[in-house]
Length: 227
Ligand SMILES: *Cc1c(COP(=O)(O)O)cnc(C)c1O
Image 1 (cartoon, rainbow, N blue to C red):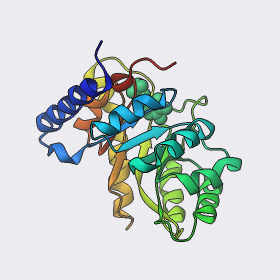
Image 2 (cartoon, rainbow, N blue to C red):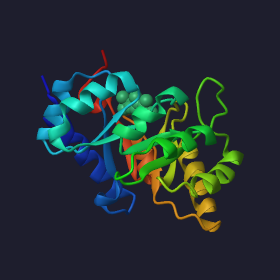
Image 3 (cartoon, rainbow, N blue to C red):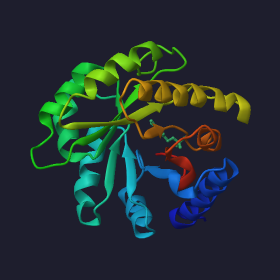
Image 4 (cartoon, protein in one colour):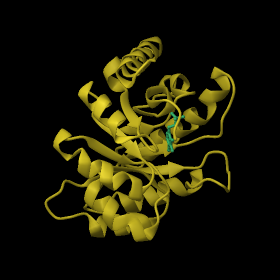
């Protein structure tokens, strides 16, 4: 059976290959290992193989993992839907939040970020398919929220994130990622410097890298099917 260590080296090679094919430097793409619904042992295995960034989408599941792996000095990213009653725990225990989609959440994270910790890195989540079942801002609302979040002192607005509907074929997969990249460029023209595009998962990371992804969020390709 192929384990996490082997998967990690295979995925890293694929990311580097995609970056090179897209005429980008391999170091410009950061791998976020999505460990949601995966046992702690797999987090430790990936960490031992050098993986630093991990993503979780449920606070209750994430906190015990974060505590257990404290000595590993990992970087924890919250990538799930965030409710107002969980913002304190997220602000206290995570390094990144990819899923900001309303001002109230950003304000609460800003308020709860403990003094002495660096600003919380955040991305705005954009809903590019107008799917009411998914969270995320509509593209027209992104710039106004970016302007407000940019002003919050305990948050560091890094960029945009998307989770598009599943599409078949490389060219189709590229389309939503291109829109997110254009949105990031547009926001930069308004004087807000963004350096992050969090986009691409196990089945579409190559398309995302071609459109400029700086963080790809990969779960099953690294850790296998979720329990
Ligand atoms: C689960 C999840 C992923 C990883 O998905 P895989 O298809 O397993 O790679 C990425 N991003 C978000 C927001 C997720 O919830």
